[in-house]
Image (cartoon, rainbow, N blue to C red; front, side, top):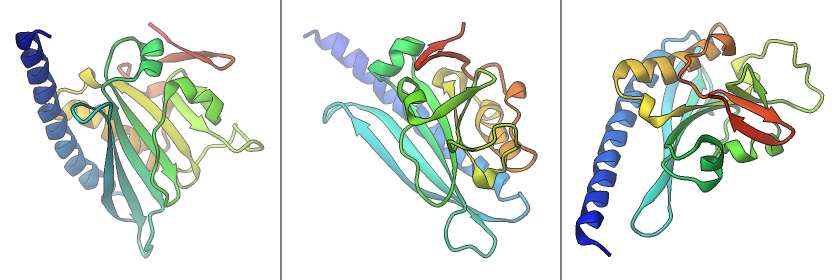
Length: 207
């Protein structure tokens, strides 16, 4: 075990953690401000976060849940989750060695669990326009436009694409705002959002 290499690796992880925390803090403020401006929305409230670690030393993923409350409602009408994965062997087989940020949205009051690309098809998600994952009821008409009050969807962004407040707005805040107002058009989603191809149950990354 090389002491210098260990020190350098720990420094990188520590600094990355600081940057992620700062990004999430900024995102939380922007998220509340933007979504609470939507007609009929009373508040957006941070519910909790959950971190997982491979050992007592290194955390490798995090998920933060936000409840979206309509006016007059005591329980959330929908939940939004921001999931970060610094490392996952199953995901790396699809996207290569890169950290990922996932944006998850679901109608209803229940907090969201993790979304994984390598198990998305098996869990009932369908890929639309190469970048937007949507889960439908078995007999649901796919041709009908869905409201934010009746949807479950996800998309994935390389964590390294988010470097400025403008990136946070473009890649996280604005798509969710569109979903809850005019509807999310997957054809117009930012090109930095990862694109995929599905063949059977196999998911592959488009270059």
